[in-house]
Image 1 (tube, one colour):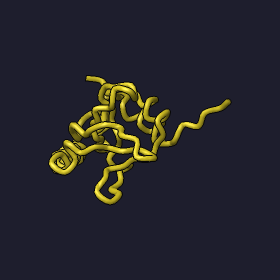
Image 2 (spheres, rainbow, N blue to C red):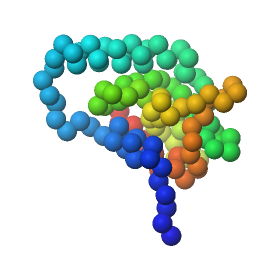
Image 3 (cartoon, rainbow, N blue to C red):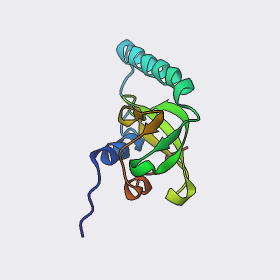
Image 4 (cartoon, one colour):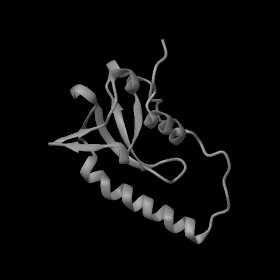
Length: 121
């Protein structure tokens, strides 16, 4: 039986990996990095402490922080995943999060949430 892994899960695997090579910093990259850091800082008060739900009101966990991804291109919500889903802190790309009524949601099943790798300290 073949399992289907959503595209966002594959993208998340790439986001949590380490950069393979560090290029020379330029003023343009520094400005882009500063804007990403400001974006992350501005979302922290809005997202921190909120519960994240997946499909069928599955409680994924509580948002702990918002960070910039390892490659510096995406904002990632750090979620303390519930123990029965594997525990630990996982990263959910902020563009995948949705507001439904008063709930913060992401598309995914119990199995796809369990497959998300833990964030590295």
